[in-house]
Image (cartoon, rainbow, N blue to C red):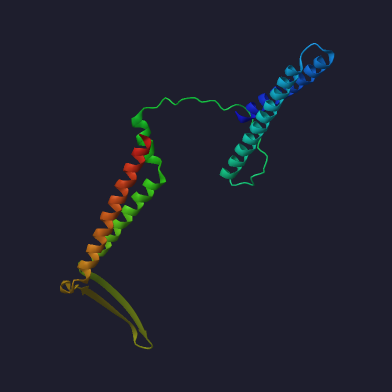
Length: 193
């Protein structure tokens, strides 16, 4: 749009300069008064200022676009075609669902919550007895092979409370992750509104 304004301002400047030059010739011929020449000069000055302002807007717009694209600000920008506004025909519920399905912050909050729940389950498993089974083979020269089997049963001592503190911490982490997910969801839905 700014380039079209610049083109229009440049054309206006060209016409104003032509009118000024023709008015000067007419003043010299005595057809019009010098006031008309002065008016034509003022209009040419205004057209020149408008053209300079339009050129500055184009330069500024191109520099802003280059900054957004993380390019050198003086990189030339060429606009090809026209940008036209075409309103989207979408209902609010579809937009809400798209926001909930495609927002990276919501996906990250969901992954954080799943990780916190897995951490809580792992921490809670420390309260359960641990079963282990082992089997060994030992070879002795001249005497053959000996096999040994072992079975272990480890019972955690709940009285120390360390495991309970870790479980409480894991539960708090899950609660925080749930709150962050709700906050991210509400923020996404608010942006859709």
